[in-house]
Length: 69
Image (cartoon, rainbow, N blue to C red; front, side, top):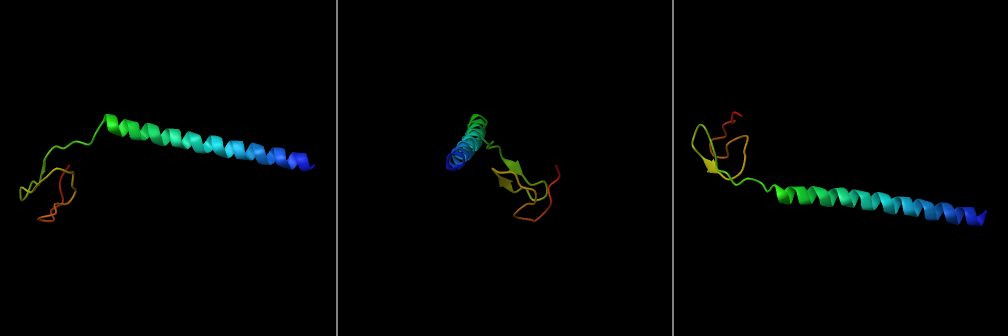
């Protein structure tokens, strides 16, 4: 009976290790995909006041106007 407990513990340890490496693999693939397609550095302009930024914004930080898509 003692042996069964040790075997079961070893099996559960192997399963946890397998799950941890699988999730790490997914994370690394996601990071690699982000590096292949870097974020754009295009200039975005507010339609109302003409504020320019190098990031996407929904509401203009200068005039607080909601941007149309």
